[in-house]
Image (cartoon, rainbow, N blue to C red; front, side, top):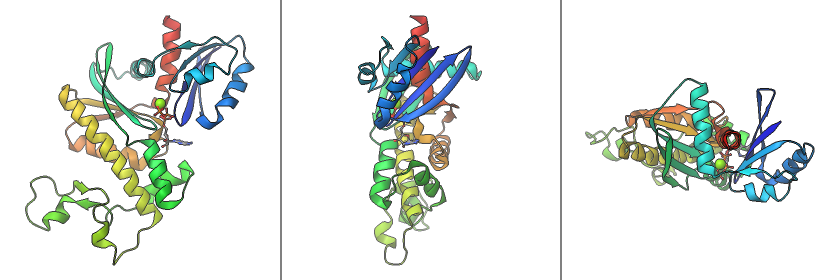
Length: 270
Ligand SMILES: Nc1ncnc2c1ncn2[C@@H]1O[C@H](COP(=O)(O)OP(=O)(O)OP(=O)(O)O)[C@@H](O)[C@H]1O
Ligand SMILES: [Mg+2]
């Protein structure tokens, strides 16, 4: 039995391989002690760790685990998934929208960090809470998908007011920038506010990603990370905006397990 575990800032992602079968599970990082208790039941198991809380998790478990650098593990996992899904790519950007967002350029068998932004899943949760008091991620993203950003975000066409726009009028000119123009005649629902929060994160993540794609002449941006889980609105914003800017988005099924799977694969090769 083998475990690959990516212990991140918000979630612990776990891949178990047994008899050529793969099982995926995730836990809150605040419950990492319970993950350790579970691992104690399998003292003979081979364990591979990665992520910001890997060393802490190692201190809690009896197995002497293999550890790899998060970016290498994530890259290895992505390559494994792309091969499995028969979607080979040679020159691409991958963007991991986790608690924070990390952006990488891949050329054949080499990855290099190309940037990042503090806009990510943690911002959706934190800003979402400040705006609405909602702490449950599933409820938060379900509400966000029902919201309307139109009275909150200022579009280019709002500024140009019917005049010819130098860039597409539907583009966001200022996230949250319309609020002071609309506040006296509309009320904003929690859903609307959450949609706007997801919107600013999605557009920021995409902007930084496509700048990297342009710099490295990459056609594809591969998006992974638990922030997309059940979060159709984030997916839609990122997909639409990536295409609009002339690049091709690719979402990997189970992509949030890339780090966990990758560290397991690196252990096997070691
Ligand atoms: N059940 C859940 N509970 C909390 N957050 C969730 C849940 N499902 C999805 N998310 C979203 O996923 C984000 C975390 O994504 P991910 O697991 O990829 O990051 P991480 O690895 O923990 O963080 P980092 O890599 O930045 O250390 C959260 O910020 C939240 O937006
Ligand atoms: Mg992570």
